[in-house]
Length: 126
View 1 (cartoon, helix red, strand yellow):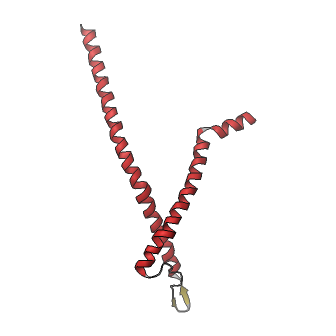
View 2 (cartoon, rainbow, N blue to C red):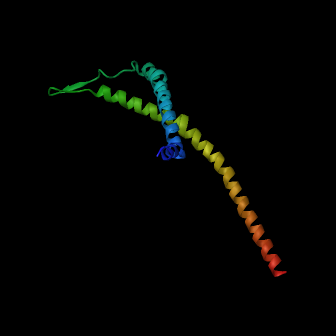
């Protein structure tokens, strides 16, 4: 039973998942810091104040606190922009660069296979 448990823990999927969770938590802290310490003050400098939680209006005695929604929306857009520009775009560029070299390798393999087949057919007809 202990051997099975050890095999389970050392299986690649479990280790990969554990690494992904740890890196994900560290990345979340990094993005939250970027948004809270860099992007939110920029929004505050442009608009005048970074916290909109006290914005509201009242209709027939019902109070609508739309400021909290604006805070959440700005935080979401900021996180999405940070992830897109600092993770997605660089990864797409890297994958495109790597894809070109792997495509060239696939073309070379196909060409070599055709040459081999042609040489075989010439030998069998001689």
